[in-house]
Image (cartoon, helix red, strand yellow):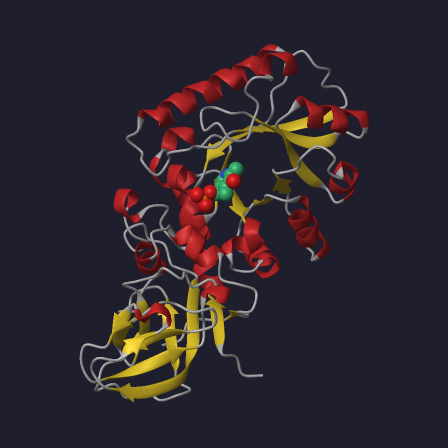
Length: 367
Ligand SMILES: *Cc1c(COP(=O)(O)O)cnc(C)c1O
């Protein structure tokens, strides 16, 4: 069946990004594939990452980890968002490492007496996951029934390398590692860096880096860290859609719900077969699509299944043509960063929210 839209995922770009990031850090790399691999497809991306030299895979949910295992992933997998009551026995059975951030979870895992592999998550200042108030009490527990292989934390502001919160978190991390060492627990794998820290904070590398967004070829923050291109990263996703209709309209025509825009002159409009149900932000203004070597900006509001672009009076576009919604940017097309700016959000959200109606095609980009 011919699609009306597709996300083309370039596995070679993911492989190149992994190799760039590995040579940058010089340590093991955990490829973060949570949230359907930031919209790139959990299983395919996990397998591509494994084949391309990732040493670990990281996910939020246990079910994501189990899906990777049952599809043949063999490298270590860490899952870090398991509330009390999770099926730790299943994690153990599938050889999945789990994060522990509370005494409640630690006790459940200990009670299994199965030497489940755990990574202790510590809160060093982001004030989200990880041990904070329970830390001193935690240090007095019996660790004999678990296999402590890791300790880790997460940066809140790694995309702003000059912020002093980064060095404060690093100091706090070292302190918590020392607290554990003082009770005789020395986890071999200490990890703190996300993509931004991997790119800009060599001091925080430790034994493993956890890279998500950069592995997909996107900059953690274009303003503070530079663009994909400046960071030698290759955007892996190209989003394409069909024009289901191209029509001539005259000047002064209101376009779309709420008539929020009006044509300024006689022009051709293209109706793109994708909308907010597919993850195109409804508020997007200032992005658009790329067709025939030219950008065509959005006009009016994005609808559920479609949005309208102004192709210009001279456009050769025809109903049924493909357009690029975003891509790597090298040809002049809009990027995920352009869409993020146009939608008052970050590139993470743009790629991650591309919906399940859009098939992922593992193939090179086309223009
Ligand atoms: C999502 C996540 C990462 C990856 O962050 P990026 O900025 O995409 O590299 C790393 N570690 C943890 C704990 C995460 O939740």
